[in-house]
Image 1 (cartoon, rainbow, N blue to C red):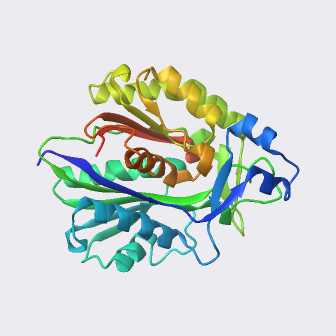
Image 2 (image 1 turned 90 degrees about the vertical axis):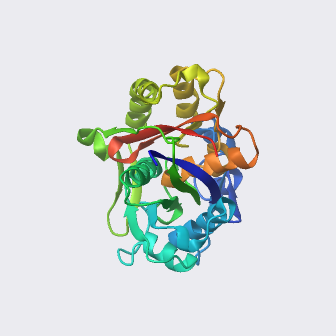
Length: 312
């Protein structure tokens, strides 16, 4: 085996939906203000008894069922999250226990919004190195736990949910080489700090960085995979803000691609956003199996990571 491929996907969102009109009863805002600035209409909010690991497990169970693999086939679990409340057992170990997996390596990865694409690259590397054969790669967040509901600039942004992928060894690579990095000197532009932890950001700093710097980096991701942007069938960017997603996708040059806009219905779900949006596109059959899709995430730490995959 010389590479890996995404075999199956799954996602989970809580049943409670918070609309912009609902938010207008909490803070000084309205539907028009929110839509004009971030493009979000609704977001899903986890119940008190729903945890990061319970949502991660629900998405992973769906992906595992679609893959045709058994729980004992999984030998690596990676969970990308920045909102898990407990340090040990980590979220990956709790997912493994919930799903009845047999002695997998289990690690959490915290790269905030770009966590899933970092985790997918890590799984790909482990499989290429022969350290794993079948991996569960999950992005899961309960971001509503860390938002300040009195701050209208941030509470309108976030939602909860999880997305998961089963990644398996393949004779030919279907997960392309990752391009990843960060701007640590600007890492303070997105923060989850304090006690209790609260999310805050410098919105204009993130917007300028994302819209001016990231399109060129995303095009380099395509170059590494030998794919022209115009040959992409899909583009799944981190679902941060529709005012970022649309101009970045346009500047990448993916003129024939389906562009994920799940942020409209789900809000910003941080590390969950890329697998959640991708799983929905595949479930709706909006991208053909085997077609090239750019995954590219960015955000906290002012980090980024992306790869081109073949759609399962």
